[in-house]
Length: 146
Image (tube, rainbow, N blue to C red; front, side, top):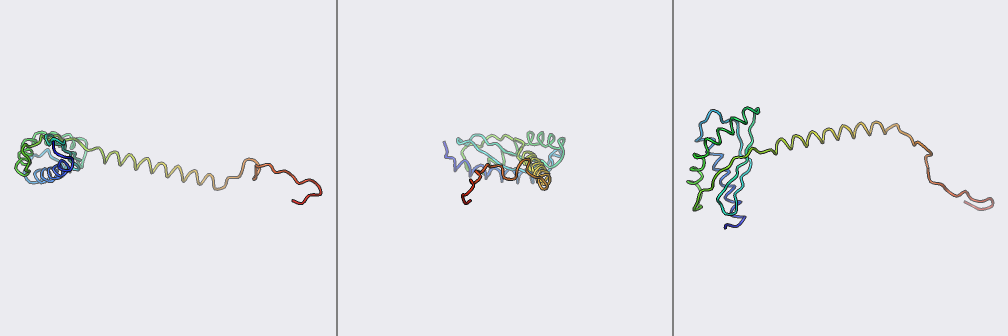
């Protein structure tokens, strides 16, 4: 078992190797504008999961997924040539959902800001429903100073 720090270093190295190989070696026309966003390697260094994003439509994403699956052997061979581990890890490609989640969060924040602005505009001219000072105070008895 390798330690987590070594696995993290290897993951970073694999990310760079695969990104360069996609740019230079893989000539599949189905491959769209793909970016390798993250890589994770198990502590036993046997399996690597690569997260990617695709710029374009859903069809481009589906075609890129097929292209990555078909190029997995070439990419694994390239990784094997460029790392010093005894065994070459298997590669698994997973579509990264972080950009979609970030877009959703931004939309929620925008909606919240709009609601806050509408509430502030409604509260601007508002007055108390009852008395301005709702707390009861004892009135001083006659002859006492307040």
